[in-house]
Amino acid sequence: MASSSVKDTDNIEYFPNWTRKQQKQFDAAWVIHHDKPDIWEKIAQAVDDKSAEVKIYYEKLVELIKNIEAGNVPIPKYPEDEF
Image (cartoon, rainbow, N blue to C red):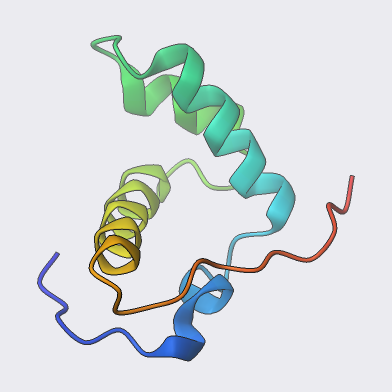
């Protein structure tokens, strides 16, 4: 991912089309399948309505983490869980 300027307001809005539930589904599936050869297929099956987007989500998540670690954006403040 080649974006070098992430605004402070981009924390939770970094993934505007993903619900908090879908984010948690991704996280849970990642923990289980991160070391498997068919990782993206397994994660896609676990996340509601996002099968084609899981790898893009992961790449954006990695970019966000790098920007947080570099001090370019604050740690996201998530609303209370919706489920």
